[in-house]
Image (tube, rainbow, N blue to C red; front, side, top):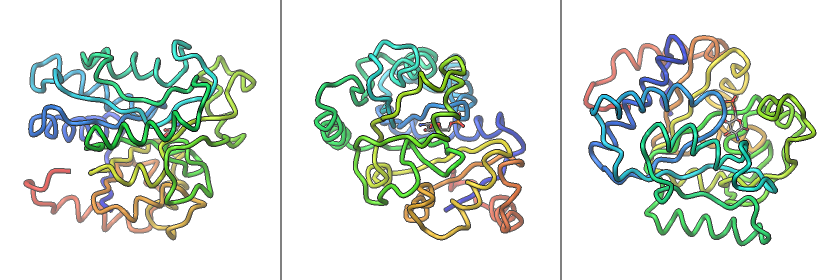
Length: 261
Ligand code: GLP
């Protein structure tokens, strides 16, 4: 995988937004896989600025959801469908009709999961999947020891993840659902390009395990080691525990421009 160390979150957002913009110029109906959480916000802000400036056109862009809470009505403000409508679709001027996501309030959750995998395949697959990372190394909501071959399915959150996400529910952990639907690790690995953004010192251990640790289900993000085109973008605090940071900086500084991200 490629590791790019950037000065701060804003620079990471700009770098990834430019990669998305280049993809959309090449393939205007690309399917962008998007993530929730605080980390990807600078990406969406930088891409929205490009749309506003007219340097990228999202008229045909499609967007796919990574994961969802089970049991929250779709119109709950913290359902990931609502969050993405607010943070991605609206600022990028993308219609809800161009959005793909699993129904977390479905009565038959299993059918919602297999149906979502089928919908992604029918849509031609995800072109670029943006990922954040949990403090325990989770991607999407694939908690530690998720199968590296998993498909979209229901998972139970760790208490750590529920506590981490309580801030979106007024700080009340009791409001955070126990169950979620998440694209499986096998599903995520089918995207053509994986881009993981991690910022802040709280992510430094998870980043080191992802990039330099063994390929292991205990650190779900380490599955990126299996992908032929995976890019990990980290700010300085998140890069603090990388032993090979010097090499990563050197490689990126000498990267041919034509390669892009
Ligand atoms: C949630 C999401 C993940 C995200 C993670 C980290 O658990 N399901 O996709 O990567 O939070 O969030 P943050 O970026 O806010 O640290």
